[in-house]
Image 1 (cartoon, rainbow, N blue to C red):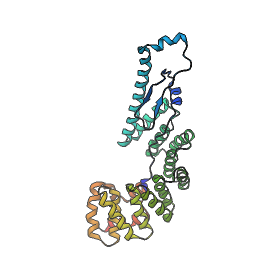
Image 2: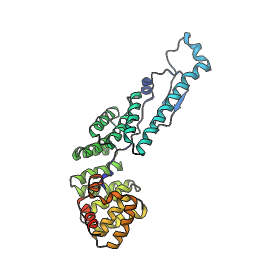
Image 3: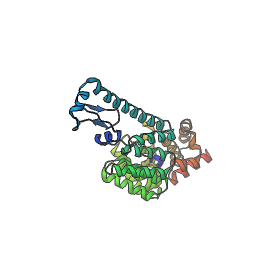
Image 4: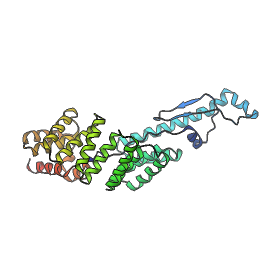
Length: 309
């Protein structure tokens, strides 16, 4: 279940002066404010200090003023559409297309750290970890106080198997924001990967307490409890998770393995029917180990169930 480590879409602020400089647009208006559907991004235009008598007449007519404003509006509408296309591709699992769109946006707005971080996310999802690290490095240079690029870089380090480096990144996120639930959960994943299950359990619990609907963290608590030799607690927590989130295949599969290890064969087999309906991958132990990164004890329990059920 520790495969819940994943990057987080970056939503970072960009100063309007920087953006207008990149666009190379002179928008003369003392009151105009343009807000687009880009989270936390607002662009305000101030009056130009360089208006002279020779150009004052041109700027005074409504037609002349409307033309640059319309051009800017059209440009930002295009950017917003591209952004939505990138997230749509991500949601559909087309990470290569998402990477291409983020690259096009970076060409337009190279000083926007969110774009670099989000392209890094698309590369992590494709296993392009080294390239992703380059993107996250650029994002941290542009926005050193923003937590998202560090969290995302930790996910890339985990993909490379560099778990100590990942933990350092998550520590940095928590230095910035001590209540970042994703950072606690991801740090728990990295700690679990190097066998620090006591630390992992503490971090998973912290994440689940900070965000009560953080279902992956709650399931990870059960995974850690099972690995630490507390199957009764794991069983209780997994039942609670599955009761509230019946279509969460990973938790159902873990519940099946836990039930089987507790000698509850009938209930385990009944639960397994739902697992297979949700995701047939759980019949493949190699897939579970590589993609879900279950704990050794939970993998062994699932293997026992698959062999004997």
